[in-house]
Length: 190
Image (cartoon, rainbow, N blue to C red; front, side, top):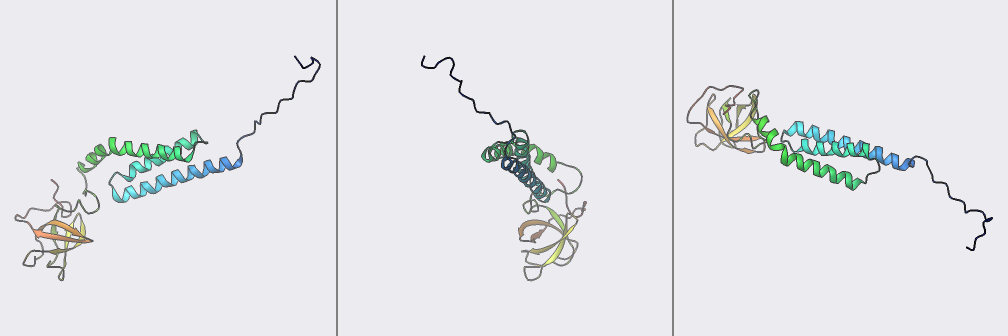
């Protein structure tokens, strides 16, 4: 051995025991804030659309926020990947049950999506309805809607009609063969 027993042992460097730098903590708080805000915005979108897509995207955002709380130094790509996986799993596994349960409710009026759920619904004319140049109004889901018809003759008021298409905010309606009493503001639930 070339070292003499009297030679001083090399000094070890002190291992820092300080908490993480402020920049890391700031990024963690920022990411937590962004994931929570994204989740809240998506919940607001879901309340407006009731399609059960934004709900599961919001859940994915909240899962990523929980990851940030428990694993503060997790990379952003891991957070985003976890949010995406949680959203997709929720949409595939839970959305069909949630949609079915929502659409099978017995209280209130339910419409499938923004416009698609209006097609096939029954409404009641409030005034005369003609072609695009002579629109009228119908009562559908307790709301007054602008409506036109492709029927050769104009439709009078208090006529039961079915919605066959939606053009922007205007309903295309045709008279029904039978007239049934209207419940729940002009919508017959099947």
